[in-house]
Structures are given as structure tokens and as C-alpha cells.
Length: 340
Ligand SMILES: NC(=O)c1ccc[n+]([C@@H]2O[C@H](COP(=O)([O-])OP(=O)(O)OC[C@H]3O[C@@H](n4cnc5c(N)ncnc54)[C@H](OP(=O)(O)O)[C@@H]3O)[C@@H](O)[C@H]2O)c1
Image: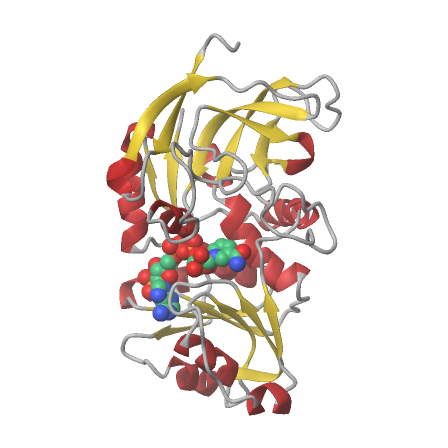
């Protein structure tokens, strides 16, 4: 098989202009590896940060980006026991985190960061770093799960134990946030969604948002969210912005509330009074995607609840730069690239 070529896209410098198609040889799986023919990949905000030189400024080129992929196992190393040829699998992004506490040093084995990325026709996953794709989802839908869905799931149900009836404040309508909304709606949580767009808020309502707040017209969205809970505050916040936004997130939490710190769409530093944290006995938890066991539990839940990931648009393999440009505009849900 190594004589056939493997079409991919590589970064040959920073910026979308330096993305280019490439051809290499098909990788050879080691004894515990799976050779996977990729069917679809999806983009995450961090892929844009990598492309722009913000997340891994010292990387070397050429570099194959992206972390989220679904594909079919077309070859296995001789010691593989967990999967067989023909299985449809998803790569688990933090490859050395199976369950429990994360690795002592994170991101030493992370797909699309310290391990090669997945924007290629053929990739290799360690058998311990793959899960079966949910059968009810199409390839495009399944490709959206490894980072965005698992991050939202981990924040609500692995690192926390959200229970029906609780409120969760969900910021924006990007990939992580719409999965959080869909999980919240499916499992009896009351989702309060913020967005810059009234039109997107209307669409969020059709996905089950309990309340909708435009953070452009209500920059004091924390006050609006507290009002929506009759002054009680919210039980969970999924923070995707940072900076001043995070201060407001702390202010809006109810007694015993929990803030999941996920994203850095804004500032990476913040300043806040310590009093709400003490007075309301708040928990602030950092989220790093999640572990494989959580991924498997989430996929089972997606099957039971019949959740269909929200895809803003599917691009062809020749349209990779356009897909990145779409991501930069702020998608409603996920941007996907189909390989077949
Ligand atoms: N810690 C982790 O493990 C982890 C995992 C995944 C992602 N992340 C991080 O989480 C963040 C979101 O990632 P993503 O992939 O979901 O991004 P995305 O799909 O690109 O979503 C971007 C969306 O964020 C919303 N947004 C932007 N500024 C906002 C603000 N000030 N307040 C509220 N919403 C705002 C916008 O929604 P509207 O258009 O509706 O306003 C925009 O569409 C990124 O910083 C990413 O790096 C972290």
C-alpha cells in the first residue's frame, strides 16, 4: 500500500495563503496502530489559531493541520485487538488520556498538535486512541465530535454532574456551544444562550434554548441572565471567551455554581472580585477536551438521545482554504470537509 499516494493539505507557513495540497506516501501502521481512510474532518477554532501562528508559533513546516476525523479502518498492526478492518472510527484527540486524571504533561500526544494532523486521505491512529463512531450519524456529522462535542460533554457530565432542571449559560453559537445546547436540551437542563445575532438566537431556540440573550445589544448579559433566573443566577457557565467576559460569568453564577473554563476567543487574562467566589462557594474548572472513556459515554448518549450535530456547511477536499475562511466568520455549529 505504501506505493500509493496520500493526498493531504499542508501548512508551509502561517496564514491561509500558505495552505497547499500535498502528496506523500501512505503511512504504515505500527503493531498497535490502525490505518484509517478518512471520510470527513471538521474544523475547530484552535485550527485557525494554529494556522495563524498563535497557538504553536515555533512549529516546523510542512505541517498537516486538523484534529477531528472520522474514517474507515483499512489496515491494522499485527497486535491490534480493539478494532478490525471495516470499522468506522473517530480519532481520540488527546491520545494518551484514556480515563481518570489527564496525563501529567498535557499535549505530548495530541492529534493535530504534537501528533500529525488529519487533513489527509490516510492517517494512523493508535488503537488506544480511537473510538467507534455513533452508527446513527453520517460521516460529516460524526467528524464533528472529537473536540467540540467532547469538550461540552466533559464540562457538563464528566467534570461536573449536571442534573435535570439546572440552568447552563452557553456563550455564542459556535461548535462547542451548540453541542452544549443540544446536550442541555436532551438531558433536561435549561440552556441560556448568548449570541451576537438575533437570527442565530432564533435558530438556537429551535434547538431547545430556554432563554436567548444578544450580547451585543445586552453587553450586561450577566444581568439579563440573572433576571431570567428570577435573581437566582445560573448553575453552570461554559466560558469560551475569557477576559471581562469571564468576570461577568463569575458574577452570574448561583450559589454552588460551576464555571467551566473552555475558551480563549477574547482575552487570556481577567480580573474579578474574589467575593462572589467565596460567598457563592463557586467552582472554577479548567477543561481540556476530555478522555476516551468520556468520548465513549458521550457517543452512547448521542445514540440514545438521537442528537444530530449542527453543521453550518460541508466543503469539498479542494475547498480547504474556503472552509478556514468560513470558520473565521463565526459559524453556526460546525464546518466540515468531506473527503468522499
Ligand atoms: N479547552 C478546550 O478543551 C477547548 C476545546 C474546544 C474549544 N476550545 C476553545 O473554545 C472556544 C470556542 O471554540 P469553538 O471551536 O466552539 O469556536 P467556533 O466554532 O469558531 O465558535 C465561535 C463562536 O463564538 C462566539 N463568540 C465570539 N465572541 C464571543 C463573545 N464575546 N461572547 C460570546 N460568544 C462569542 C460567536 O458566536 P455568535 O456568532 O453566536 O456570537 C462565534 O460564532 C475557542 O476559544 C476554542 O479555542 C477549548
